[in-house]
Amino acid sequence: MGAAVPAPLPAADRGALRIADRVVAKIAAQAAGEVLGDAPGAALVPRDRSPHASVSVRKDSARLRLTLELGYPADIGAVCGSVRGHVTARVEALTGMSVPEVAVEVERLHSAADRRKDEGRVQ
Image 1 (cartoon, rainbow, N blue to C red):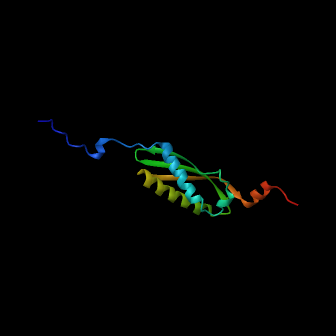
Image 2: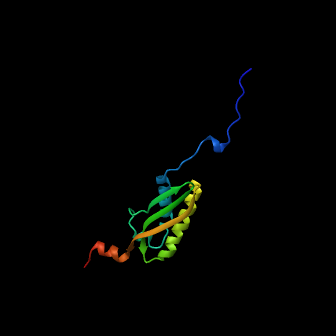
Image 3: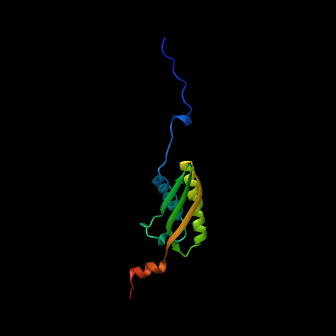
């Protein structure tokens, strides 16, 4: 008769999945952009100024740092809180990692006055 077929290994023993840090950073930046698209003053921020994310991954947790630009006037604290919550939820859902920290840095505020100044004076 033939040789006995070994029992299959449990799923956890068959291999591992490693998500690269840059992939986690891209997920975080995309998630931040989802919130900022609907934020007050979003039309004032140039389209080429998308959020940037950096990440530090240790075991199954990711600490994120986001840099973004906002339209002004806006409730900066509320917008940053919304970004923080949404990014945390999306990264946890898509990667399975916990996100104990999301640091948000507002790099620049864009106002309607800036846009008028850039357009030049019309007489």
